Amino acid sequence: MNKFLAILYLVVFSTYVLFTREPDFFGSETTQGTIHFAKDSIGTTQPFAVYAIGKQPYRINADYPFRSYYAGDKVEIIYTPEYPTNATVNSWWGYWVTWQELLASIALLIGLFQIAKAVTRNPTPEGLLSELENHAPPPPRRRKYD
Image 1 (spheres, rainbow, N blue to C red):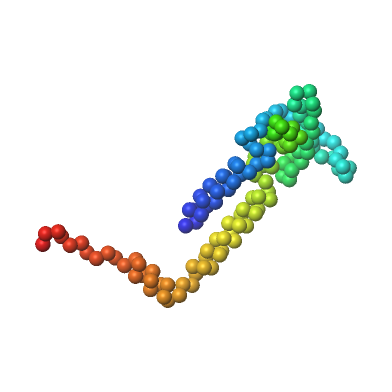
Image 2 (cartoon, one colour; image 1 turned 120 degrees about the vertical axis):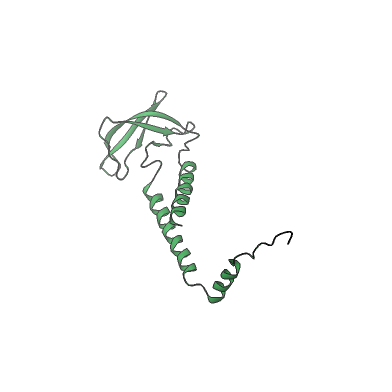
C-alpha cells in the first residue's frame, strides 16, 4: 500500500508540476541571462538575472531560498514571448519545484493518509461479517458429466 501511495503521489505531483508552471513551459521561449547583484527596493543586495530580447534589456529577481549565484553566472531564462517581463530562471529548484508547493503536497499526502487510516482502523462487527461473506471461497466446481 505504501509503495502504491508513493508512486501515485509522484505521478500526480509530476503531472501537476508539468502543467502549472508560470510562464508556461510549453508555450514559452528560453534565452541566456547573466547574474548581476544590485540593491532592491528596500536596500538589500539581491541577485538579478539580466537578459535581452532583441535589443530590449530586461531584469528579473533571481533570489530564491536555497539557491545561490555568483556575479557573472550564466543562467537560462524562460519567458512568455507576448510578455517578456513575465520570466523566471529556468532551474529545477525554484521553477519546477517550489518549496511552498512541495510542503503543501507532502502535508496533504500525510493528512489524507492519516484520514484513510482512521476510517479503516476500527471496523464494526457488521462490516467485518459482510467482508468475510464477500470473500468466502467459491463453491467447488462440478464436473459437467458426472
